[in-house]
Image (cartoon, rainbow, N blue to C red):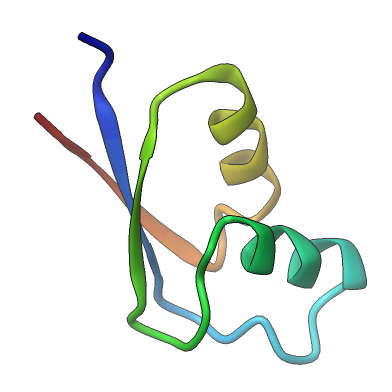
Length: 61
């Protein structure tokens, strides 16, 4: 089974680049402190790379 990643938005996406705001929305993150659990795959890690300064990532089993 592939590991899952819990992604939590810790900083607001307001006043960020449009691409970064779009990625936050597409990951399913709304407001600050919202979390989402996604599969640990290339697409997810690529999105995380672009908004790493706005989020906190932890691995869940």
